[in-house]
Image (cartoon, rainbow, N blue to C red; front, side, top):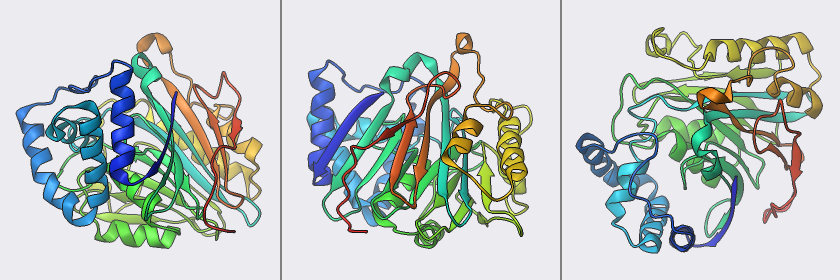
Length: 339
């Protein structure tokens, strides 16, 4: 993974990122995973007024990145804003546990081996928002992370039956990490924000509140632990009755999403009510069933795995597949909010 640290204003962070890429010979012309069509360009243009209203900071960061790259801002918007909204490409598994002693959120990010050297771990401490650490396959968007207030969030992406101008999965996750301190605040934000794509967002905070939010541009459902349980789990599938009509069609490949969900849920259910860091690592590493055991020769693998300890503000990560590499604590994050 590439590692980046960003501070100052959002524009300054974007300019630094864009300039560094340009210095190393990387100029962003498009996407390695999808073609930027006129339809996507038009959708991106329609999203700009929405971002200007609800998330102007990230527009400033995109402008900074474009200036650092010396490319039109429209090029980056056409890449970032339609992502997650048209093509089902990301495949992830997430869960959270809160047993009175441990508050942990675990996430496997499954994607293409061919571009794994481009995936990024970021530490952000920008003006006017919460500092956070997170991981991404998509530049300034975030797929999982935790902020200095102990809110952890992780997305999984679903087949986009519908879409409309708004914030996509990666921008929603980034927004929550920058602006929300608790799971309840994050849920309230998701209920108000204009949503562009279909996704689940798993949440955990320092109070022990955990939830999975299933949402798209028309509907939102909140899944909390069932009676007698202290965990939630998800993959690339909607599991609530409210989102049933938006589930991924059976003929669409989802990298064994149902199997991954069942592996996580069954392991957590059998464990009962005591969840250690080591146990969560074992679940993500496939010790309890299929979750990350891909054939890399088919250009598919778990490209990183992360566990966020919301109670103690600690980060653990594997840069690669957790069945082959050990988790290591990342101690670089320096928090600005006491306690």
